[in-house]
Length: 313
Image (cartoon, rainbow, N blue to C red):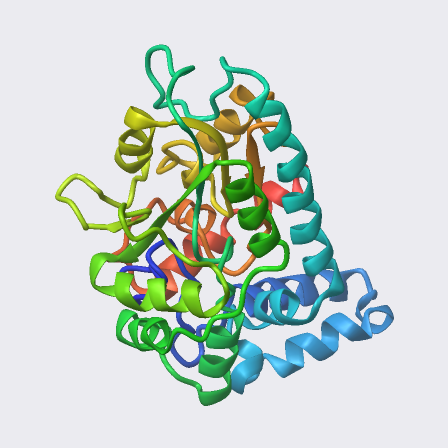
């Protein structure tokens, strides 16, 4: 993550810890909840909340990435959800191959029936798991900034997301080309390729199937141009990612993002497959209006302002 821009691993990222005294999203929420509960003489009945609020006094416990990193790195539910998603994707792939009119890509134009089949996967938190990087930075109290992440990429040690390798092998065995469309930077492509290969995912040598951000002038954070690039010569059967932007342009406010999900409801679980990622993403930046120049306290203020909306549901 770039603490100045709010980005990490080319997508979106966990905000850096706020300045001392400002607290994290979790801590602010817990403090507000504690005050509210006290008014109703209920705090004594919620020792977990009280303890967590106390723990927010300093150190790792106050970092907004703590709980999401622990969940992604330890929860059996996380593994179950990724395995489930990829197993469903394998089943959908069979249906897609049998239907020559099938396409998953909104950028797909014209009759694509005669084009070779392909699938598009994101990389971070879709194929490669960066929880070890996040845990390491939390332990060290270190930055999640771009230089640190680039060093991690170049180590090429990220493990695979459970289920990813099996799906990729299954797709290739069916004659389906696998493209990796990632918002890792172009200068991080070599490390990314090395990591994929090291983890048992060999890459094609006669065609570039790892499409990174800024590799071409129009390949921006919005992945539409890269999906369009793939769809020009292939029939895109499935899209798999951990962020709404992996499926459709989604740099819009939360309400419009929710509308996008509703608009394409028939694609979820049939053509589009979403993996869980509570650590970072465009969902997070949407909460503060996609304004990377904001200070950490202002980002937190804008993000926590959404708690009232949630409480009112």
